[in-house]
Amino acid sequence: YLEKLTIVSTVYTKSARDTMSSLQKITAQLLQKRLDKTEQCSDWMIRPLSQDQLDYAMLDAAVLPKLVATMIQSNPLVAGYNGQFFKVHSHLHHTSIRFVKLGPPIASNCKFHVP
View 1 (cartoon, rainbow, N blue to C red):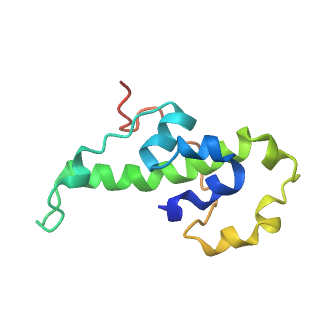
View 2 (cartoon, rainbow, N blue to C red):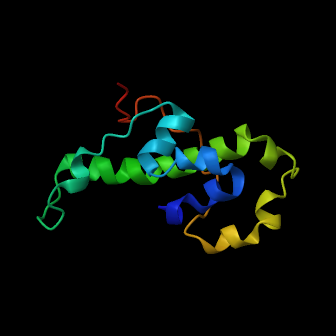
View 3 (tube, one colour):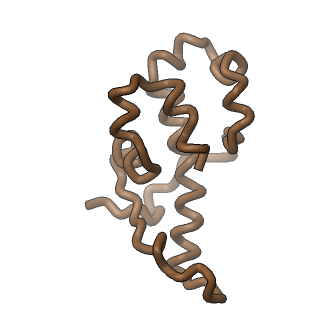
């Protein structure tokens, strides 16, 4: 998942990064949402996958663009690059990130589980 979110290590201080060591923690901190990781330890070898497993996989993938957008929009360091952040930090292009805005933000009815 973005190789431990390489962008986090570029944009945030070490003390902030310490609280963002997993996708679940990053989502909680930046989006104030809780990712339900119940299905993470389910048996992914059994086919067909359950609807809960499919929902989990889709949400894990869907949350990444929202996280990147939030990091970019809410961080003063990134704002200082005047839209050239990814050009200056070209090493981020070599991670698994491909940040392309495809449409509106994740709908509020997505399966985020808020405590």
